[in-house]
Length: 311
Ligand code: CP
Ligand code: NVA
Image 1 (cartoon, rainbow, N blue to C red):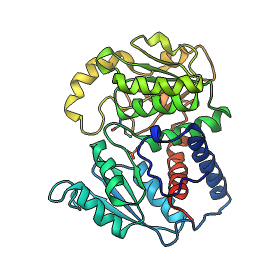
Image 2 (cartoon, protein in one colour):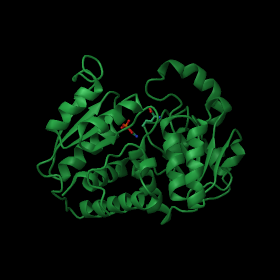
Image 3 (cartoon, helix red, strand yellow):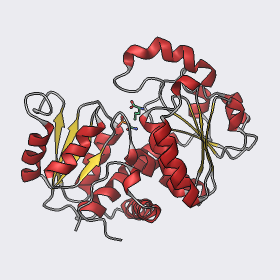
Image 4 (spheres, helix red, strand yellow):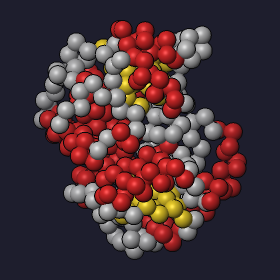
């Protein structure tokens, strides 16, 4: 599989085989690291990490993965560079592309990550935009594959803000990889029709079913119940409104039990607001695999960089 030179902006741009390749490469790199073996696939490569929004996992995953593979990274925070303020994104992209071999971008506008990819001439990796968070899905799917042994046919249920970057990317990823995906959210927070439609088109090919509903009873038969914060970064002013809308959608022990299976796992991309989208007892339960997910951010991001830029 040759992904050299490709950007990683959304899972829409990758075939199921390519996604599976990245997940399996991550598993391989993870196994090697556990044996104390790291590589030098990024030796001599300089990597820019642009962060307009804060981050713990994504930032550290890129930094550690880059270091493990012998590369150099430079963190460029929101107030530290001229991105989209004094200088257009197109111009910044062309400057960074002359100096760096790869660019990670986390920010608000998905358009910006597309412009960076278009104008920099080097691979650009989406570390989260308002619309998508594709590297998170690779980590989530690696975690599910480690836990269940397979992905296709799993019943994946997302509960909460059905129109945020996580719901969008999970739906697309499930459609591509053949996981049945149910989004449970109040109607006001249902995903955009175009994301549902495109996910259904992938699901048709993979044999998965994509469902959007208001009904919490749809957690029945879930293999995984997933949630995310009720207010994504940049939406802090909506806190009161979201709590009112989403209180009935909290993932608690009763919701986990309502899957009817004793094998259902709990997942969350983190950071979590305990007491809102998930209760403390669910977060801390044995069936919660959130810290495997967090660790897998690093192995999967390493796989993306190695596959698209590494030697
Ligand atoms: N899950 C995730 O992207 O976490 P950070 O915001 O800490 O990067
Ligand atoms: N939906 C969340 C995901 C954080 C990883 C946000 O955008 O803040």
